[in-house]
Image (cartoon, rainbow, N blue to C red; front, side, top):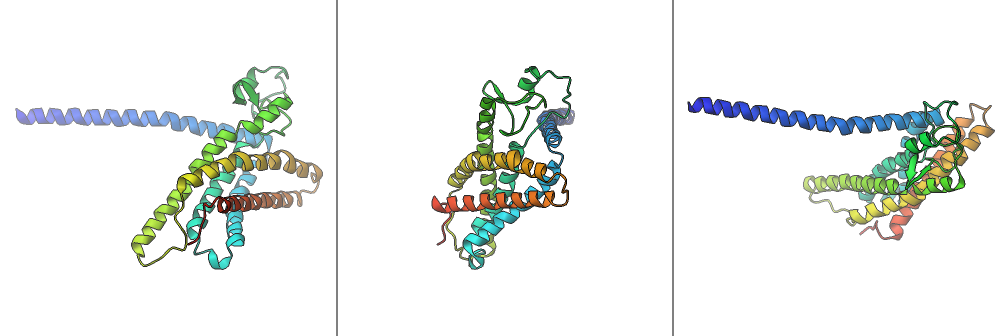
Length: 281
């Protein structure tokens, strides 16, 4: 009798655990599927506005790591690069995520399913698809010619709003990326102290909270303006002036992206040192 009761309890618990796992997986699939669809839709809209967006994305990731490392080398010198590895490694990790997200967030967008049959004054599609600043629909880039529908031209107020709209998402991304970057570095430093107890680091421990807040503010203001101008003014101008020189145009875009990334890294490192967030012992 007791064995039957135990078996029934075991069976009930098994069914309960299976049901909980099934519900949990179903609950997780919905947000994951929604995020995946948002990323896919956002990517398609950016490619529709700029067919070379995929190539620029790969270039941006490579340049983000390279320019940050070059800026660290330039500011510290070769002899102090390894002693300051506690700052260099999280700086590179944060730069890769932060710079690419800044590029993604303020890239020009056009609805890939938009057609010329949409009326220019029809705000129904614009309100439902364009990013919103309170009750105002704004383009993702302040300098793009049209709204998401590919027909409606943004007003000066909407263009000004597109500089403000990405500030909070960029601030949030900067805080998260910095916390993750410096958190990984702190974990590696802890492992190093366990494996090499005799090693004495040349750097002082960094306040992760202050570094994260600084990175968030930097991305919301400096990175926001830099990538708005880069993708809305500089690159379209290069593509227009050198539209017949297909061999030179990609090299010029690569050059301006490298200079933009290097400028961002130098400004970020200089700001951190100015506010006392990076100190050697």
